Image (tube, rainbow, N blue to C red):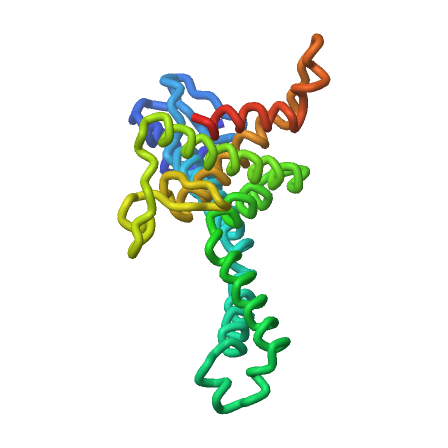
Length: 239
């Protein structure tokens, strides 16, 4: 048995320095461990490498989830520029056909619609990240994220109203200097895109751990599966 050990560990444990020949055993991966039960340096390096691999995989999943909503912004930006060109007054002076009312209407439609998309990036990140990180039934995770984001916005509006801190828009700057904003027609605390990202991550985390939960009793048919995930996330979003 001693001959089967590596040369650097044939006499003493690489971790604690005790004589292995006084009584040693083999772990499941056939690496020598002395009486103290402490793993060798080789095992500790293997555990560190496995932790690094898990961390790398988690970061790769997060980066791919972030790219999911961002991949649409390039097309949205090009369409927004096209709408701005169709409604440009100086360009209409050079190209008279741009003054035609149907062309002006088309330009305004493109510009206004794409501006609405870019102005609500927090919603896109919330839904996109939750759907991308969910391990099963991704459409359910995206729908739960959207509903919880609406709950989150409304909860902020109700709280500000109850505390008497709901700001009134300024004639010049609007809500810019008040720390509040209007998202989907709801005035609430301005958390920007970060709020949508955080809520999307939380939705995916809770959904993966509660989507298969089954309850018994009268309410078991109502609050089971994805509906239980929604109930948990609705409570967190309201808080």
